Length: 130
Image (cartoon, rainbow, N blue to C red; front, top):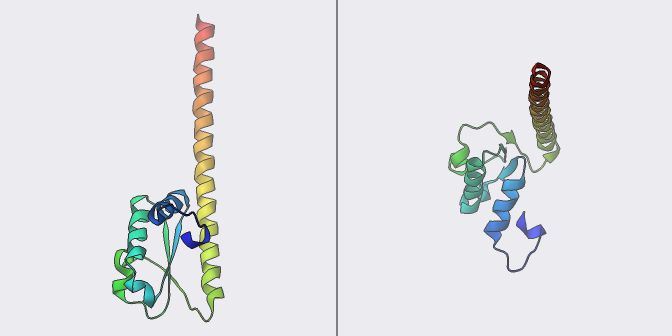
């Protein structure tokens, strides 16, 4: 939410794009009112172009038109009268997503270390042969 980091003279679209580029996942709250906001769909499209996971929270009464680019995507139902249930689901999913990313990073680091050790080993073997 760009309003919470006021930077006079900065283009709002630049702030939003920068925030999406630097995030791990985009959580989007879709309400009946967001149907009339072209910015919501633009931000979703930008996140999709950056291959960011998009996690929709969908309030009852949201039309299929509002889902637009997220048609067919699983979402978390969001009841503004009882937000705890949706937030619990969201936190569980984000935790799994974070764990998967950390596992992927650990695997990549492990593969990199193995590759480096293999190169060192070949270099050492080459020295012994000469």
